[in-house]
Length: 378
Image (cartoon, rainbow, N blue to C red):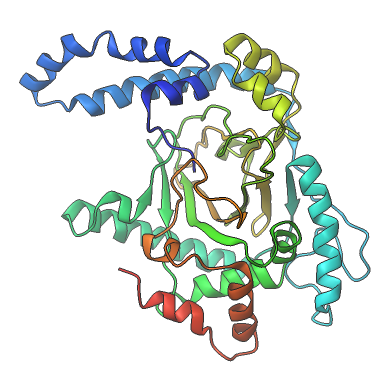
């Protein structure tokens, strides 16, 4: 997901200042502090990051006031014979590929218009619980591996906007991780998600991200941002699916999405400066990802959105979103590093190949592609 990589360019996107002004804002005190930091042992890079983070937190708090009337994102309903509310896990096993394609086309029409939609029952409750436990255990192991120097941070965690009390844990696949394969089978094959992505990008869509966003109590609100820019004539770049591994309540910091903001007109206004951005955001309806366990929000990467602050009073109420993104096969570099294990990302697994493998898994015939990819994991 979105990370801070360039002082000027990123603050232009996130705060609304020009690159020159934002660079000056952060660099004016750099020279005087470098000597102090070198004497005290403080890393200048860390200090600058903290300055950027403080500015972003202030901006996020300002933007929060623009969306006081935000409403929950409701599950979409399509009129397809045999499909209930939002399709999802547990739909009739008699559903055939033709029916799934029709259902996927119907949802895709909504997604292309709104930029975001909710689908319930993507994961069963038991699968969501088991996957959540597995991922928090994986996080603990990964943190230990990074702390000991066994792996570099980027080999286990992707960069994330406002990293304090928030992490983006990349996920391995293979025979050693059966719950991951089960979750993929339920979410891609037994829910409409695979058919939706296929309807828009085709079966050559490429698995681009595979990770879990974890927002602990105390994490700050992010600023509104798109994950990829609008490029005229190029169409959608990515579709990302956030699947809740627990009920997401208001105090846990649900994702805020701004429907229908994946357009050229909105992006032009959003990047035209602070005044233009603020006027846009004040008028824009917003929806909140108050997702029940096992439900998902799938969205266009160009859509404006952000993660809210986790202000839960219970320290155990960490918010975990299992997610994956599929890339338009006609697009090269998306403009942001992908949140995915390097071994998995370099394989450029297509949606069609993955769906075929998961169909075999569902028949009890194993998952040879996923197992092969697992042998490459470090």
